[in-house]
Image (cartoon, rainbow, N blue to C red; front, side, top):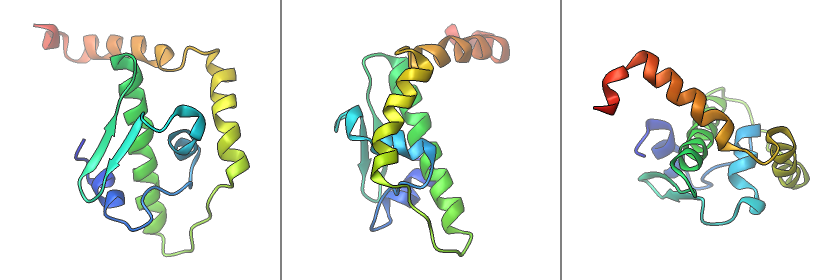
Length: 122
């Protein structure tokens, strides 16, 4: 994805920083090194076992970049989240979603799309 926020963070020397709850899921080593890929000065890629997983991963990735750009624009030093919290974020995600993860959001997103643009299936 070539989003403005994703490309802006991809152009930063440090890349994505652990600034938000969203970014803790992107940066956690428990999610595996191959789910999120930032192409320097280019954009964001995500993968998943299903379209739903890839979509929700991209949502978290893009939202993390948007939060970082807005935080950086505030002109104040940025406060990063510590490694212990990052590692615990996946456990919390699993506990809250009961292992369903993206499967919880995807059906709701499809229902919304059906309401707002019913012709997309054609």
